[in-house]
Amino acid sequence: MRIYKSILLLFFILFFVNFANAAQNIKIEIPEVIYSNKNSFTLGEIAKITGGTQQTRRIFSRVEVFPDGNRLERSEVLRAINDSDASDARIELYMPQFSRIEAPDYEGNFTETEPQEQSRSPAELIKIIKSISAWNGGLEISTNNAPIPDGKLIDPASIVPGTSAATLRFQDKDGKIKSLPVRMNWTQTAMIAARNIKKGDKIRPQDLFSRPVRITRPGMYASTPDEVEGFTANRNIKQGEPVLLSSLTSSNLIKRGRRVKIVARIAGAKATIDGILLEDGRPGDWVRVRRIDNKKITLRAKIINENLVEVQVE
Image 1 (cartoon, rainbow, N blue to C red):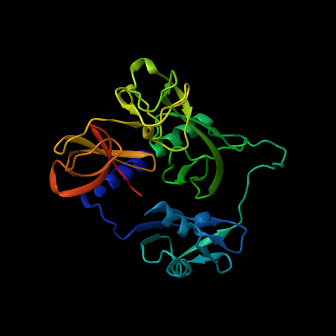
Image 2 (image 1 turned 135 degrees about the horizontal axis):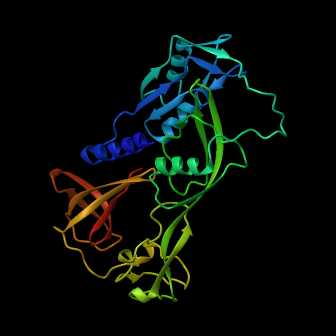
Image 3 (image 1 turned 60 degrees about the vertical axis):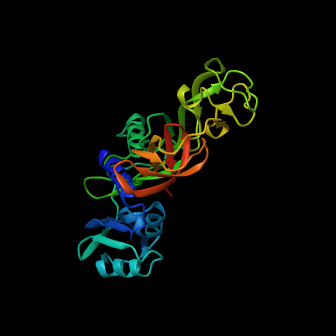
C-alpha cells in the first residue's frame, strides 16, 4: 500500500513542476487465466487498471470484451480499447497473446446458508483502506458479513476520505479476482462551538472544544485550535456545531511577499511545498503564488490563513 501513496505523492510533485494536463498513461494488466462462466465481460471484471484519472479508469473498466470460446485474444482487447471513449490515452497492455477462460472452482460444498471462513479481519481491511486514502482519522466499515478476500488489493488505487461506499477487488496468488462491496463511515477530530458564536465575533480558546465528527469530504472542518482561534466568524455558528473552515475569516490583510506553505490535495493525500504570495489577500481570497525555488512556476491558490494556501486539483 505504500506504493500507492508514493504514486500519489509523485503525482503532486509533477503537478507542482508542470501544472499542465499531459496525455494520460493507463496500465492494463490481464492475467494468463481468467475464471468466469460469462460469454463476455468488462475490463473492470478481469483486469487491473492503474494510472490516469479516476474518470479515465472508470471508462476503461466499462469496456466490454468478447472471448473466442475459452480464450480471450490480445487483439480483441486492443480492438475494444481503440473503440473506447478514452482511446487517446497512452495504453500499456500487459497480457499474453491470449488468456485462457476457465470456469471458477470452489473448494468444499458450501450452501448459501453455510458461512464461509473469513480469512482477513475487518481491522486489516480498515488498515488497507486508510493506507490507500492517506487517512489518519477514524474509519468504520461494514461488509454485510461477507468474507474478506485474501490476496492483493488491485482496485481502486485510492479512495477519497468521506466516500460512503466502494467495491474493492482482490487478486489471489492464483490470479483469481474477488470483489467486496464495503460501506464506510469516516470520522475526524473537529473543533466544536462551546457557545453560540455570532457573525462578526472573534473566536477565543474558551469558545471551543473538540470531539470526533463524521465527514463526507476531507478539509471541511477545523481540526486544531490554530485553525480557528483569532479568526472571525462570517456566519452564525450554533453551540455544539462543528466549525467549518469556510465559516471563518480574518480581518488581517496578508501582504504579498509573505512566505507560505502551498498545499495540494487529491484522493485523500496531500503534498506541500514552500511558496511566496504574489498578491495581497485575506483568508478565502484566490491569489497568485509561486514556489520559493522556482520563479517560473506560478499557481492560483486559495488563502486558508496567513501561513497556508491551497491549490485546487481536479
